[in-house]
Amino acid sequence: MKNTNEAPEKLSRVLSEPEVGRRCDIGTDWKGLAWLTLLVAAGLSGFEKLEHALFPNMDSLQHQIVTICAGTIVSVVGAFYLTRKLDVAVSLHAEAEKKLALERNVLRTVTDNLPDSIFAKNTDGHYIFVNKAFATLHGMKSPGELLGKTAYDLFAKEHANALHADDLQVMRSGGAVVETERTAVGNDGNLKVLQTTKVPLIDKGERVIGVVGVHRNITRRKQAEQKLRQSEANLAAAQKIAHFGSVELDILNLNIPEKNPVRWSDEVFRIFGYEPGAVEVSREMYFASIHPDDRENVRKALELAIQAAKPFAIDFRAIRPDGTERNIHERGDIILDPKTNEPLKLVASIQDVTERVRADVSVLLA
Image (cartoon, rainbow, N blue to C red; front, side):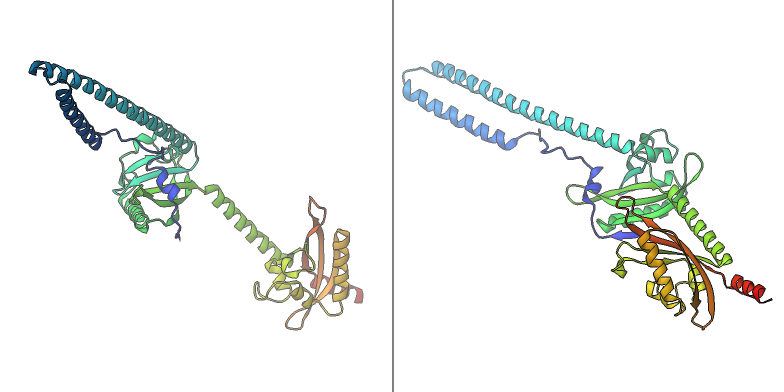
């Protein structure tokens, strides 16, 4: 399990509520209505006083008629104002809903066409969002079949308990990324290896309201890694049997040894009389293992091969830590950079041919 402290806010909020800019509130504007009422009352009161001041000789009926006309005009104007304001609010709300629907459609289109399985759960463990890949993984025809269900509807109780505990841990973390690996039987009946990444689902108020997860199918990668490990093990076994090792040296910057690491197979250590990994691999270690009388010849042969960028073959003696000598045959080639045609790497094989040399000597002396 891997934890990091960085909260992935974008992923957390992606499935909660897509941003659509400023949201419109088309509820009753009580404050606006209060102000409008006060303005109308003040206007009518002022109009009443102005009417009595300008037309003192009007009788009560005439005053009522004028007041009713004025009130009707004010009502019509107020209704027109409120209607216009409501139309604007409704239009803004409709535009926001349209943007929201578009973003939801984009989100659904993207998630349903990803090969990864994506899901979101609320704090109670109920699925509130799944994509097609997740539904297919669990044998469902459509994502809608999983909405409202929990892990207990998909897995055995013990497994579901473990998943729910994992979800709770993610939600309590408040922002940590949690990665795990698990196996699952796919809809095709084959065993799959899934890498699961989970993060808390956070709303606009920074409250944790659930968990978002992504299952990535890494079965092929795991199979490739297993094949590579098996291939390396087979190669190591074959080299050990044949007393045959491999060497690789970066030669892009020959004057800066630290930028030109040397890599040996395990059998090279054994040929030079060491346990694999017992000593640090370096050019110095390589030449220190060569018989003093042979070092200069080996150095010149390697330098010439690098300069000419041609294959090479060298025979020399190695001195083991216990003082014994071994006869070594090394052959290799220079790998060139395909773009610059400059020497990039030296690759070689090292073989302990001591027994063969001794046999040849015995034949000559016989």
